[in-house]
Figure 1: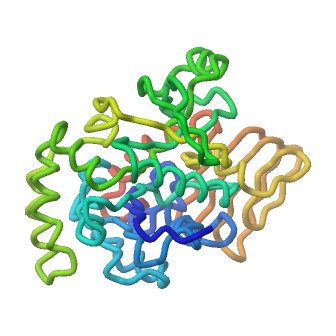
Figure 2: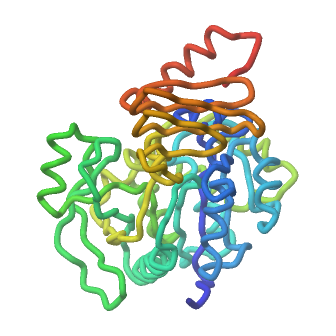
Length: 366
């Protein structure tokens, strides 16, 4: 693959990953977890871009308190290409900030892809080809692009995209016009979506030109547009952090879906068929771990007897986790905290994390 000189990548890496507690903590959240292939997810996210863009074309946006950890984890990137938000203002602000950075380097004709730091991709060559083809579309047409993932099952944890007609293209990737975005469905509705054949999972990945996204912000979210105009020449300056703090303090909290994607009419989706998982819970994480003959997903030293379908993660060297006579549990052991819950309740892990935080004011277990 030829390196795309006019494509820039913005990786959002500011999440707290509470559904991955107790391995994921405020000081080292999910994107720095190394249970998948022995590398942090954020490092995997950057390394898979090799051959598509140069390191100088990648920007990582995280939180202020994770900038140094990110720089230690990603020595292949220029230190100035890792910046921190003073506080979260959701994905629209991160996308807009990334666009301001890209505009200052490539101008309005540059294209950018917005990715996340904690997804897993199985077929990386197909993924890179999809990004390259989507970048080409964005460069020549006034379109806002996303990637719709071909659903493998009726998932209730993802939003969906309803597809319209196919876009004419000579690329290897199929593109479709988008009718609408829909919220996370219940199981019966999800089954209907999958059966219909024209619904895709909303991946949360986006591709557009600077000009097109700038026009969208000007129309739908002028507050963010004005911020980008003021910020585009501030990157790398000694007063950058102070200026960004001032700008972010003026912003409302809003996702890119609500701010732009659900309002724009010029949206197209690349058909994503490269094996994607946002690894949103310990249950989905188990699908990427080694399994024994009884279907137990295992990481770290453990002994299992008369137990099936469990996800067991032992994150402490020299410790043993033993599970007997229990099915469909999530068991996660760390040096100072252990989680035991049913798989069914794993998606609600934020509730116990909040309780732990509320009840342990003097000791941080989160």
